Image (cartoon, rainbow, N blue to C red; front, side, top):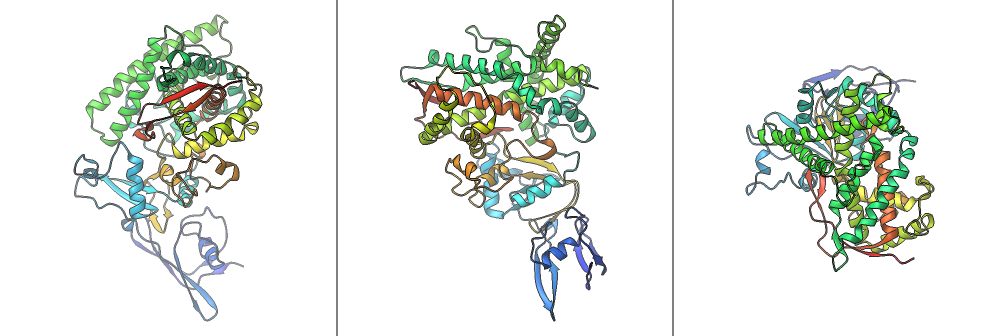
Amino acid sequence: MPFRNPFPLQIKSSSMKMKTFPPRAFSFPTPRAPLLDAACVLSEMIGKNCPHGFRQIVTSIGKKPVVNFAIKSFEEIPGPRPLPLIGNLWRYFPVIGTYSYDRIHETYAKMHEQFGPLVKEKVFGDKILIHVFDPVDMRKVYEADGNNPVRISHTALANYRKARPHLYSGAGLFPSNGKEWRHFRSMFQKLLLHPSTVDECSNILEDITDEMISKIPNYLDENNEMNLQPLLFNWALECIGAVTLNRRLGCLSAEGNKEAQSLITAANDTHTAVYRTEMTPYSVTSYKKLEDAQNLHSSVVEKYLDEALEDFNQKRNQNCLAVKMLQLEGASRRDVFTMILDMFMAGIDTTAFTLSFCLHNLARNTEVQEKLRQEVINFLPKPNSRFTDVSLKHYPYLRALVKETLRTNPISIGTGRIIQKDLALSGYLVPAQSFTVLQHQVASMHEKYFPNPHKFEPERWLRREFTPLVSSPFGYGGRMCVGKKIADRELYLAISKLVRTFHITYHYEQIDSVNRLINVPDKPLRLRLTKVSG
């Protein structure tokens, strides 16, 4: 039987005008119905949580309960008070401000503590950010994505690429939205996410990892210490070259490859410049830095792509991912070039920094390191043993270690979305087209969602003592990272081999992160590495 609401319901819509809904019959069609779906009413009256986050006051008339919803308007969302014209931008200024762009995760943690699970920040002019800290609200935002999730990111990079249509088919995977993004993503995602794609490059990735480890003794000082970060950059670049082009770039050789290594600098400069142009959109200096980095990046990668395709034509390189991309229906050379560039840009810094934080956490938690080593010895009985099976089901503690590192030291602060419809978040009405930032990093370090959050404890993932969706380092839904499986394989190989070969210790200040579009270590990764016996 449908429930007939005997009282009219009033609520403010996204236009902030009061709307009155007359009495009508309510039924249960779907929990994903529009904002005022009457399933909210009935579900609340039988004691369940409203799926849209409406707050309620329950009273009664005779024996019949009456539910009065009290949802607050967009203007009432709490947040730092803006000044005319400049908004809250002044709070990020040196000396007078208490916020920081460099340690933006600490800034957002302050906002969460002061204002609660939903925060409105008027940054500059008419730019408003809605910071979402509650995983229930995060899920609502993700589930409202539809087929084409929308975000605003890498705008300067999009402008750079669209000004060069002879090279690029569009903005690429990071900045694009709508049909352009859907077309580009759907063209490549099946190939990139297929298990065989990763399996086919496992041997060459293991070769690269073994070579990287063999170089370490050459760099150790008299205390058996070294800053491992530069070597990890070279390893990550060599890996992405092997994955995309099925070729060795020579980054780990004795003489090195200065041309290839320039890509490391270009990737770093691109991330920094994109971040600065996001914060200060009219920065000519930052855009010029981006332009220089991308000119270098594109020229080097284009050369490597040409060489890989020539090798294929000469039947010297028959297992090349770039060639497989080019053979996909509808894929042009410009499409493949754009995708390969995105993979180089995303696959160097992010993988190297994640591995750095994994090793730092292992070095500071010797019990965790020893437990992992015992698991690794089961499938690598000797330091020079080769992997015979890299299925994750056999290595639960290794997988838990990476998850815990990505919780405590994620590669980004969270996820941005332009919501496509009105949503009720934490009792406030957030209208369509609002810019929301899902604050996964801050939420992942909150005791409400992870008990004892500052303790590095991989076991929590084995016991499943966590709130789902809070830690989502690779994103969620349609825009989940297409390179996740490749990154996982690289990390598992490197961590396993390093722990099997070396005892790893660290004797300096704890390493935290600073934000350069992605989170990067704020100190050198100076580790002491001593050989494991047997």
